[in-house]
Every structure is written in structure tokens, then in C-alpha cells.
Length: 299
Image (cartoon, rainbow, N blue to C red; front, side):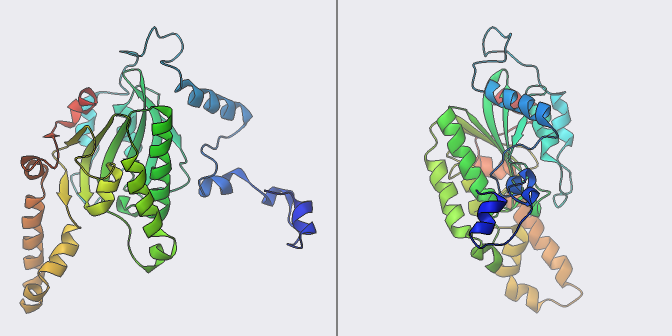
């Protein structure tokens, strides 16, 4: 916004030139979208970014069948851990799902629970919004909601179809998040979803919980043109463990100290079963439960 001289002249103290507007600081608040190691790499990234606004990569005759997948699609069956509480790197899934080498991540240093990419699928430029479980389990905090809303609007203005990869326990809650403007950002994410007119599809990889999952899907799991779920998916109005603690509080309190953990696990297992992907599909919360290896073809 201003150099050291103007800052000092305004009576705001003496600062070193390198302390004003460093790229990594601005990336951490979402102002800078991509940080590269040097000028040459930054120019290459800019060219990659601009390439998404042309029908297909240079040299391709058209935008159909223009790209090969980033890997054997059967690998997708193994990239979500069987342990539902274990985090994983969503970028490995994105890299396999989209055309080889096409994914360009935007604003990686900001709103970490929501990873955003421009990429190509079968030669077609798309925007990919993906939950990153390595940050707060994928819970949508204020920064992630702000980032996702801006990305929705960017894709809408640029006519990029949107692919959403969902694995979230919902919106982040609590006094600290409230003080960071969580409610305002959550509402804005719903508003951005309501503005989407470009084609959109969602894939529930594992957790799709509460309003946070609905907001990532553009307002509801029924908002996208298609919403698929992997067999590992579970859908619920709130986190299973929290729902059991609240809904069965009296029953758990009445149990002995020895029996309480077993009863808790039993009740959680029953709720997991009710929220399984196949159950959600039976009441049309998702359109289909698909083999992960078929995801790219479905999209």
C-alpha cells in the first residue's frame, strides 16, 4: 500500500523496505494467488494460468479428448484412508483425477481447509474446489469459506465448470471463529453458491456433514447437476460423535464407567451405518455411489 517513507511520514514508525508487502505475507492472507521461487518460474505460472482461458492447450485441435489422465484411475480406490479419522493429501487425488500435469493451485497459503485449482479434464478447463483434511480435518473456517466463495465467483465469471471434492465435518464453530467473522463468510459462501450457473458436479469422498458440506456443494447436495459419492462416504446433519454425545447424553450418563465407552462406540456405529453413502443415495441425497476409478469418466 505504501513504502517506508510514506509510512514514516504518516507517523507510523520506521520500517525496513523488505518488511512492506513481502509476497509470502500477502499469500498468507490470500492477496497473492501463487508464489514461485524466482521470476522465470512466476512467468511460467502466469502463462499456465492464462492458458486456461483458451479453448485448449496450444497444439491441441479442440477441447475434446485433449488430455490424458494424471495416473491410473484405480489408484483413487486407495488414496482415502480406511481409517475415517486419518487425514490425507487431497492433491494426490486431484493430480490423478485431472489431466496429467494440468493442475495449478491458487491461494495455497490461505484458507487451507479449502484447496482450489484450475485444471483440465479431458482437455476442458475446470475449477476444482477440494477439502483438505490436513487442516482442521477439512472443517470450513472463516478463511476457507472466504476463499471458496471467491473461487466460485471466479469460475462463474470465467465460465469454468466446477468440480467439488467434499470431505468436511462442516463449518468450524466456536467463539474464536465467531470473532473472525465466521457467520458473515459462511453466509457469503452460500450466496456465492446460489449465483453459480456454470455446470457443477460434486463428489463426496468421505465426510459430508451439515451446512459446511452443503455450502461447498453450492447450497445443497442437490444443487450440483450431479452429486456422486464414493463407497467411503458418510453424510449427516452433524458430526456423528457429537450427535451421539448430545442425543444420547442421558443414556451415556446412566451407563457404568466400564460400559460407557462400549455403548458410545455402538451408538456411533449405528449412526455411521445410517449415514452411509448407499443410505444417502436411497433417499436421493446423492445421485449415485460410484467406484472411485469411474469418477473421471462420470465427471
